[in-house]
Amino acid sequence: MKSPWRLSLLLFVVFFLLLAAGCTGRVTTREVSPDEKVIYDEGYHFSDKKTIVADMVKSLLTKYPLDRATDRPVLIVYGIANRTSEHISTSAITDDIRQALLASGRVRFVNETQRENIQHETSYQYGGNVAAETRIARARQVGARYMLSGTLRSMEKDQPRQFRFKKKTLMYYSLNLELTDIQTGLIEWADSAEVIREASKPFIGW
Amino acid sequence: MCFSLFVNRTAGSRLLLAVGLVVLLNGCAGRLNKASQEYYAGQPREALALLEKGERFSSRNELLFLMEKGLVLHQLGNYRQSTEQLLQAAQLIDQFYFISLSEQATALATNDWLTRYKGEYSERLWVHSYLMMDYLLLGEYDSALVEAKQALKVLGRHQEALKDDYFTRALIALCFANLGEDNDAYLEYSKLARDLPDPAPVARDIVTLAGRLGMPDEVEKYRPYVVGPLAPESSELVLFVANGRIPRKQPGNFVLPPSIRFSFPYYQDQHTLQPWLRVDPPVAGMLAPVSTDMAVVAQSSLEARRVQIIARETARAAAKEALSQSVGKDHGSAAEIAVRLGLFLLEEPDVRCWQTLPGRLTLLRVPLSPGHHDLTLLVNGDTGGEQEIQLPDIELRAGQRVFRSIRL
Image 1: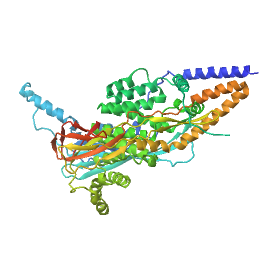
Image 2 (image 1 turned 30 degrees about the horizontal axis):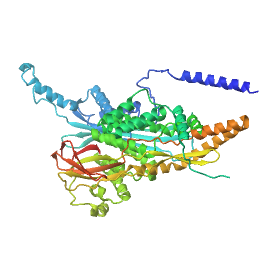
Image 3 (image 1 turned 135 degrees about the vertical axis):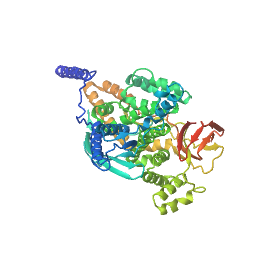
Image 4 (image 1 turned 90 degrees about the vertical axis):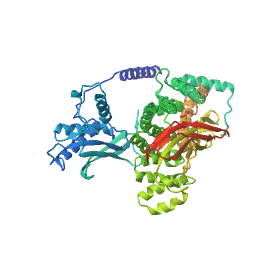
C-alpha cells in the first residue's frame, strides 16, 4: 500500500531537484535603453537622476538670469549636498547638469576640480623645460560669475505596523538647486525637482 | 505529570551534540571562532586572513562574516574596505524583513542554527555605528550622515531596547552637527540629555545649538551643566575609544520530560568598566566622555526578542512531539525513542553573535586650538595600570574636527 506513495514522493524529489538545478548557474542579461524606466524598489534610481536633471536644466535655461544672458556667463559648480538616507553620488547629478548646460552653448564652466593640476602644470611650464613661446600666459584664468549649489533631500514613510502581507513605503526625493551671483551674494535663481514613489514588497514567500 | 529540570550535560551527550552539529553545520562557525581568537590574541591580520580564507561562506553566516570582517578592517585602519563590508552587511539586514517560509519550516523541524543569522537589534545598530565612524575617519561627512539616518531608523524601531547606546546616539548628533544641520543635531542632543544619567557631556552642544536656533529657555536650562566658560566653538579632536570585549552568547536549556527540550541563548552578565581618559599635555574645557556598555545594550536587545524566541521554541516543541508520537504510532516504541533522542540532541540554542565587538565604546571630544598638536592619551584601565598612547600628529584648521579610532 505504501509503494505508490513512495513513488510519488520520489518523483516529487526528482522534479524538485531538476527544478533547482535549472534555476542555478544561468545568468541572463538584456540591454536597457537609457530612456527606459527600470525601477525595482522605492529607492533612488538612475532614471530619477535623468528626470530631475532634465527639469533643472530646463528651468535654469528658461528663467532669469540665464535666459537673458548674452555673454555666456561663467559658472562654477559647488556640489550638491546629500541629505538623504541613502548613499547617492550627487556628483553624478552635477556632472549631468554641467554636461547639459554646456551642450546648450549658453554658459561656460570653471573647472574647479582641476585647479591644483592646472597650478601644477603652469608651474611646470615656467620651470625651465618649456619653450617660452609655447608657455601659457599667467593670470588669464576666467573668474566665475555664478555659483551653482544645492541639496538633495529625502523623506521616507513606512506604512504603520498592522497585520498585512506586504510592506508599503512612500519615498520622497527633492533636489533643490540655487544659482548665486558671486559678486553680489544674491541668489538669482532657485528651483526644485521632486520624485515621489510608493513601493510595496511582500513580507512572506518561499 | 510534568516537571522540569536543567540539563546537566555528560561527556557522552556533549560528544553526541558535537558530532550532530558538525554533521549539520559546515565549518563556518569554527572559522568565525578561530578568527575571533586570533583577533583577541592581538593578531587582527591573522583574523582577517582566516575570514578571507577558503571557499565562499554559507548564506546562514554571511552577515556574521561581513560584520566581523568589517570590524577587523576598521581595527587595521582600512576604513574604506571596512565600509565596503559593513555596507554589504547593512544591505543584507534590509532583506531580513522578508520571511522565508521554507527557512522557517526547516528551523521548526530542527533548530535555529539552520536559519540565516539576522543579527540582534543591537548588532544591526552597531553596523551603522561603525559605518559612521569609518566615514568620519575618511572625512566623508555626507556619507556619515546617511548612516546616522539609518541608525536612527533602527533606534526608532527598537527604541526601548537600544536607548542605552549613548555612544551611537552621541555619534548621530555629532554627524548632524558636523554638517551644520543644527535643528536635527539639537533634537538628538536634547533626547540624549534626557536619557543620560547626567546631561553634562552634551550640555555645551545643546546650549550652543539652542542659542543659534533662538531658544533662550533651553539655553538657561542647560547652561548650569556646562563646565567652564562657554567659549565659541573651537576645533576639536574626536576620539572613538573601544575597550574590552563583548560577552558571548551562552546556551541555556530547559527540559520537560520525556524529551521536550527548550533551548535559548543568553548573554553572560559581564560588563566592561569605562576607562579613565586624559590627554597630555592637559587640555582645558574637555567634555565628559559619552560611553556605552555594549553588554547592557546587547542584553536588553536579546530580552526584547524573548517573546519571539519563546513562541518559536513552543511551536518547535509541539512539532517535534507530534512527529515523535506519529513515528511511535507507525513504527513502534523503539523508533519513537530513537526519533525522540535525535530531536532532543538536535535542539541547540543559536548562540551566534558578532564576536569582535568591544565591551565598551567611548566618545571623547578634546577641544584644541587651530595648529599643530602632539598629544599623548593617558588611559587608566580596570587593571589599575596607566597606559600611554601616542596619538599621530594632528594639524587643525579653525573650526575643524579630526577623528581618530583607538582600541585599547
